[in-house]
Length: 297
Image (cartoon, rainbow, N blue to C red; front, side, top):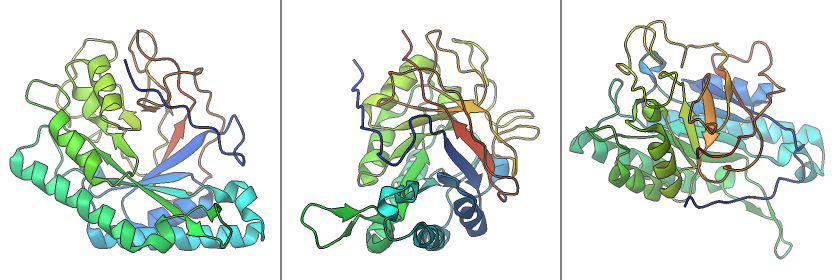
């Protein structure tokens, strides 16, 4: 049985709020996304190959840039910004992937991924004034941070199963940060089994581009022509607006490009996106996430 978590909705967020996330590959993209009102940005390098890990320097500069924009927006919201939507931290999700192509990584690549997560998590701790709740002087009350750091990563075994050992280490090294399973799930031998494994391992979201079309059909090469992240593919194309993301339906089929929460959101109704990123929101691709539906049977 999957562990279920049902966090209480934030008091400042409307019940029908649709999270908007952009995909960017530089600091300016993060800044523009935050200025335009996006909820989150996925930061990666080499979008043309589906995204790889950005440098530690780029991550640090991106955290500071997002925090500066969030401080400006909170200042405009007034003294009681903590009771407004501006209380929500800007979500920065860092891609951790050593290269493009297959999601099967050897021991050296796995060690590099673990080291990247550990160092980025350590950096977030060093920038605690931006990434950790801030004390107010009132017992039991803190102010939310400006930036919520998280990771986007994933790995498969040679037989198409989720690499539980490596993924568990990546989650553990994240120091409690939210971790999203990347499009490795689209190349898993069994979509539902990978989905459930992700939930058990503590991942919070799943990113999928639905390259298979129906349950049980294994996709082709991860980065061939027309494949996500490859020539002619939709994922990661700068300025491309990605489609709705919801949890897999009862048939186990994901239609369109979607991000679904793995464990916490296996209840609820299907999402109905009502918001897109503002025009001119920079190099990021617009991501819209609906409220997910029930889990696969």
